[in-house]
Image 1 (cartoon, rainbow, N blue to C red):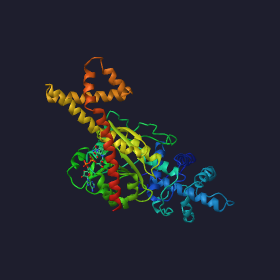
Image 2 (cartoon, rainbow, N blue to C red; image 1 turned 60 degrees about the horizontal axis):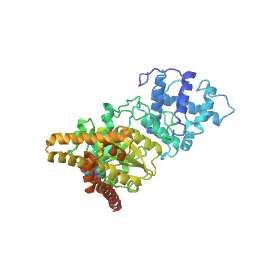
Image 3 (cartoon, rainbow, N blue to C red; image 1 turned 120 degrees about the horizontal axis):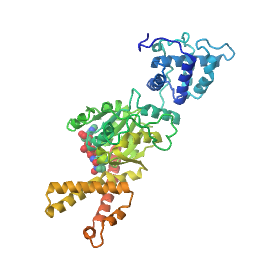
Image 4 (cartoon, rainbow, N blue to C red; image 1 turned 135 degrees about the vertical axis):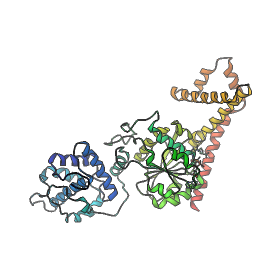
Length: 464
Ligand SMILES: NC(=O)C1=CN([C@@H]2O[C@H](COP(=O)(O)OP(=O)(O)OC[C@H]3O[C@@H](n4cnc5c(N)ncnc54)[C@H](O)[C@@H]3O)[C@@H](O)[C@H]2O)C=CC1
Ligand SMILES: O=C(O)[C@@H]1CCC=N1
């Protein structure tokens, strides 16, 4: 037996054919670029699928089988007229598929051809994969779509050992709101479960394996902040905490930068050298532009700018994101899937992010002000404060739900409440006299302008 406790057993034709089919189906062909971690992940996916089909091979055994097939392929290529290689029985059955896989593989793999000449392996056994030395060309950023798609498959496969790891830099209100929203899948009303499969968005529909990010478990989330002051509430959710931003980056695939805007350059400078092509960096800082974020991070960093709002906490957030230069549609789809329990998640051009900040990031505070004023009006007229606040919040909630769920224009619903000569029109007249409409529009405008100003300041801060 080998380390995995799986008996050495010869491969039969069906098993080998299935193995190659899985490689093909995963569209791995351009992705075996010789990088150890990446290759490991690929074989883990294949391992899980083989197991599901009743073939119990360890990851190392699959790697070894692949090595033999590769070796046979190279032998045939070098000596096309010599008899078929003996290491793979019935090689002719697999030759066509192998050619299809090998001849469209990552160009870097070509660098490893010579090392395959030294492959020494016995018959159709599993061998000892720990002895193998895979060609190791210099790591390069993956650039083609196939590779990106494979990254997505790996990241989104809910049954993978290595589930998506989420990090938060900054342990404030917004980080907590997003974390709560993401984790609400455990027991929340929008729980789709690990088996829930959804169409994510145009462009990723055609992937062989696309599912939602499964329920994110608290053990896969980590948050950092300089002091322990805010960390307790994250720990209560089961989230790991640390004072090291670098630790968060090194242990995460998706990293939310959730510090105050003026601190973003400082934090990005600190983590920059630890960012790899594994990462998606999501900045939620008001105003801070993608250009600023990208300038402070290594070339080709996948960056996304997200503007959430606090109701993410109760799965009723309104979130808008814009993708950076190197963020592909799949990266956006991954983020959307990750955040879908936080509320409404939309994608748009970056110019809309500051507007959304005024409309919704800050907008929730405008609604709270209005709710507070409603309650205070009732208190003025003699209602007990607690009851007045409770009714005010339910009024805002009910009005919001009806507005969203009916799909009607607010003016339409307003007119449905107004009885001619009744109470509502008297109240509305007073609001109009107070300039509430103009004041609200100006509030969105001021908040948007302030976001733009913060963006200019953080850009200047980053250049210092
Ligand atoms: N609060 C909200 O409703 C919204 C906030 N945002 C944005 O989210 C970001 C965070 O805002 P809040 O959570 O409200 O702020 P906050 O003040 O509640 O939290 C900031 C956190 O960052 C931590 N921090 C400070 N220096 C740090 C460093 N060097 N490394 C790591 N962590 C550090 C603090 O300890 C604190 O935990 C801001 O950029 C804001 O513009 C965006 C949308 C809505
Ligand atoms: O007030 C702020 O700056 C942040 C951004 C949107 C909501 N809170």
